[in-house]
Image (cartoon, rainbow, N blue to C red; front, side):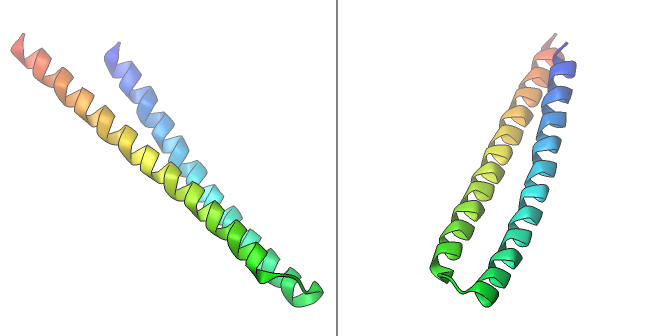
Length: 87
């Protein structure tokens, strides 16, 4: 049962990583779009930079959460292996 649970967690972590890649692609596209908008229509570049920074911070936080989850799962897995070895 615990193997099944750990595999689900790993799958979830893999999906989160894939989602992070997609977010980075969206961020890159958004930056390109904002540059085009500023060049064509004019506008405040500061506004777009603030949004870019916020998106990058969100992606970084997701990355840190993923790493923390991986460490926690690895620790639980090691503890389970030690417990089984004792039996």
